[in-house]
Image (tube, rainbow, N blue to C red; front, side):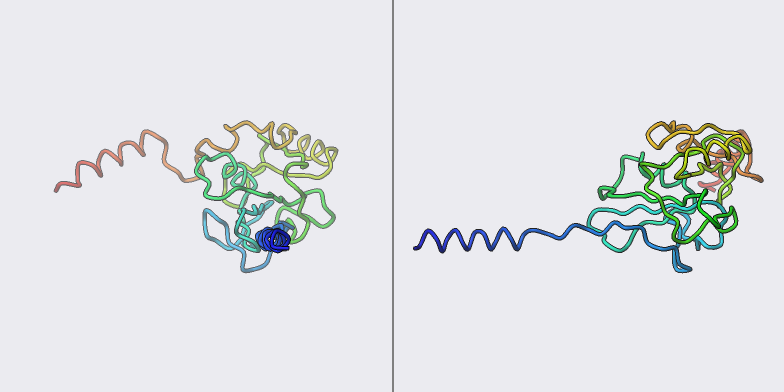
Length: 188
């Protein structure tokens, strides 16, 4: 009898420890959503968006102003939480436009087709990686805007991790000169 009670108690403890699976369904984009890196309202920027759901942070995905940014996030080693799911706007969805990519037309980034290296510029002014659920839509976009069609794991690091010179940015030599001048003026 005692062994049966101990077994029942152990079973109850194990059952209490079981946690419900975290909901990683995509969240609709609202006016409250801000970009993880820029902390700016996503609705104010054109082009496709992304969201990443992190383990242990239910109901609070990280939103990204550009798809390029979420891919960079996935490739950086400094993550504090495991990434459970990544959703991107399907730019081939009915009604999706560059100015209004949609609030609920999310597709799993692992199954999406991306146009990489084309002329499309995202909401933060950097070259954009444009997602589609249908490969033919991606091929059509690539034909019109240049770029190559590939899936997430095939996107080269250089497409997301290299610095981008935005309009009005100083060239590297000018930037280096400004840094040297700042260093000289620190002790004055």
